[in-house]
Amino acid sequence: MVNCFKMQAATTASKVLGITVWLAAGVNILILISLIGYILAQGIPYLSWELFALEYTTQNVSLFPALVDTLLMVAFALSLAAPIGIGTAIYFVEYAKKSNKFVSIMDMTTDTLAGIPSVVYGLFGLLFFVIYLQMGYSLLAGACTVAIMILPVIIRTTEEALQAVPISYREGSYALGANKLRTVLVVVLPAAVPGILAGIILSIGRIMGETAALVYTAGTVAQLPEDLFSSGRSLAVHLYVLASEGLFMEQAFATAVVLVIITVIINGASTWMAGKLMRGN
Amino acid sequence: MNLQKDKFFKNGFFCIALVSVVAIVMICSFLFVGGMPALEKIGVMKFLLGTQWRPSSELYGILPMILGSMYVTMGALIFGVPIGILTAIFMARFCPRKLYRFFKPIVELMAGIPSVIYGFFGLVVLVPLVRDNFGGTGNSLLTAALLLGIMILPTIVTVAEAALRAVPESYYEGALALGADHVRSVFFTIVPAAKSGLVAAIILGLGRAVGETMAVIMVAGNQARMPQGLLEGVRTMTTNIVIEMGYATDLHYDALIATALVLFLFIVLLNLSFAYFKGGMFGNG
Picture 1 (cartoon, rainbow over the protein chains, first blue to last red):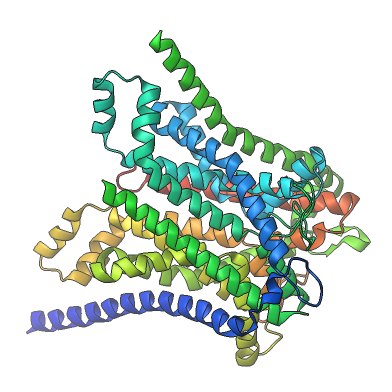
Picture 2: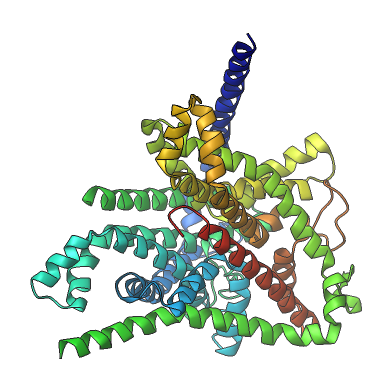
């Protein structure tokens, strides 16, 4: 009898726990849908061609200059961070001895870089690039700052991609007489390309959404830049300025829509790329 | 000949790998060099424990901001940890494979949404929600904690899921063999076994909450005074830097860098403990 009762209690508790787990998962979906749904529903009616006018004025509150700034910074930051990040990952996976004390310190450095808040990066960018290297508030200073920021993202995803390449590829290459460098560059790296691209796309997303690190490095000028040395606001900074001023809430909603759509596309592309890598193996 | 060449390239890649070390050393030294003068002038104790932040009358105590960061972070953990861990358990052990293909990208998308979008959502949805239901202006500690609780979810879910998946399948099978049902097997064998990794997930989420800036700025009210209550405005260390950096000069400027230094040291400490707990995970040590 007693045993029977205990069994019953156990299954009830199990049921409750099981339902809680499903509920918790549901909360995530609910949050995401309400976040994206609300912004799209409120913002899409305010999307207009004026928002993409070549020049920013207080009449059109164009986001086009901010978009150009963002793309310029993405391109420049990637051209700095991608080679360094991929090279670092190659060193960690293909060359470094795991038992080496210094290697494990370097490995922890990557984790630490990933953990530093973007506002600290922003302050460092201000102190080092803007003031010490005398770049001034400029796209260049902003791009350099976010380049350091995305470094750990690129390193980690590239590491994963390289590790996913079967060891037999390397052995086959050696057996055919190729040396280490040739093996890495011609055999391993091409096989890891989808994973590396997934990481790079992910870091494009990071830069696109970055605000705190850019306010005091790239500045907040809302006009089209003349060159890399002119100041300019990124799209996220643009949204922040609009929302905190509170003068152009309609345009802020529309800008948020553009930013959300870009985020969704970038994430989709990254997931698709990563999936390609998994299928490849 | 070939060996020499290989050695050359090995050193080349090593030099590239050194860049991130150099970066962190530079960040460290610039924060120290920039922040030390203020700490010396104000006094470390006065700076850390001073309850007044009034740059106009040369009062630089960041205790209000330290407490602000702590309260907001704790609030975020109260919201985010239970949901995050349960979601991770769902993904690792409950989610049907077909659903997982949709669910995983959803969590990744949540991680990818920029903080300024979260902040904007908080500003136009959560602030009015809190104002109408609980009173006050809506720009409050509670709103910031809620928003951060949402924002740290993907971090916690991703790390916790990896920790749960690292537990050997035999644990689960053993529990089943002893007569436990699916739920009991998961909650009483897998979850305790993944404890170390779950703690690591929480620490990483904590770090994100402490370091978040833009989303907090948009919903927290940002009054530089000791936290007054759940429904009152609050300022964190991160927001203090962004709000005042634009016009600060001299000692005020240095005091802000010192604030960042305190924040940085705190994050490094968190990272060390994260590495410690991650090391305790299955398959990692």
